Image (cartoon, rainbow, N blue to C red):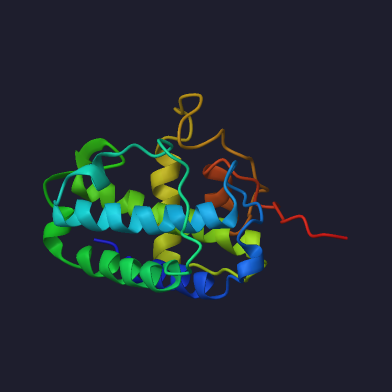
Amino acid sequence: MIDLEPAARRIAALAEGVTDDQLEAPTPCPGYAVRNMLGHLLGLSVAFRDAGRKELGERTGTAPGTVLPDIDDDGNWRGELPKALDELAATWREPGAWEGMTQAGGITFPAAEAGRVAVDELVVHGWDLARATGQAYAPDTASLEASCAMLAAFADDRPPGGAFGPVVAVAAGAPLLDRVIGLSGRDPSWAARRPL
C-alpha cells in the first residue's frame, strides 16, 4: 500500500495557490491550460476514489481524452478539488482498496495497479500544475519512488498516441523528480512562457 495523502495534500496546496489570471496559462501537458489540468485533477480524484471503493460506473468507465476536462467559471472547484483529494486519500488508506480488480479510465485491471497509477497521476500532474503556475514542488519520496517504478516498468513499450510520450532523457545523477518527469514523456526543464 502507498499512502496517497502526501501527494494529494501537495496538489491541494498548489491548487490553492492558483490565481484566476493563471487559469488560461499553458501547462507541460500538451493541449491543457491550467483550468483543464485542474478539471483533470478533479475528475481523476473522483474516478480513482470510486475505483478504490469498487463503485464502478461512468466515472470509472470513461477513457481519458474523451472530452477536454475543465472547471466551471463559478470557482466551485476551489472547494470541490480539496474535498475530492481528501476522499481519494482516505479511500486508498483502506486495505480493501488495494485488493481484487477495479476499473479506472475505462480499463479493468488489478486494484493494486490502479492505486499506483493514482499516485503517479498526482505526482506528474502536480508537477504540471506547479510548473504552469510558477510554484515550488517537492513531492514526498515514497510517492516519487512509486511513480518512478511504475513509469520505468513500461518505458520501452509505449504505443504511439498513448497516455505517455516517449521518454525524455535526463542527465545521469538527475534528481528523482526529474527522472520521473522524463519517464512520463515531459521535459523537466519546461518552463511557462511569461509575457514580456
